[in-house]
Image (cartoon, rainbow, N blue to C red; front, side, top):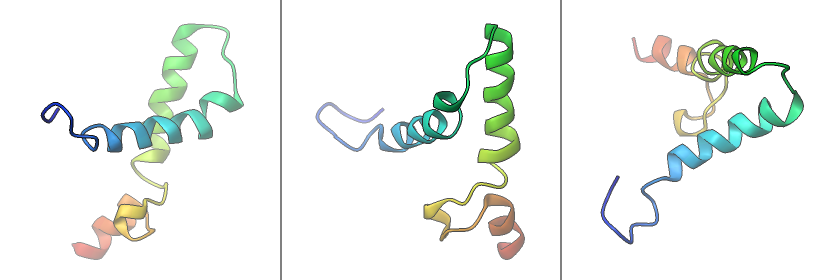
Length: 70
């Protein structure tokens, strides 16, 4: 975290949690905590970090971005 009074220190994390809630959490419910944890893990590693388009990458997925710069 940055110093006190810096309004931008949590912006990227807040954006991630907004996406997580809007794209996964608010659409489903799970009977157990373990199932919820597995779904969140799959969302992060199977979709968010690989296929979801990110505005800071110019609207392409992280995999496409890595292939483009490699």
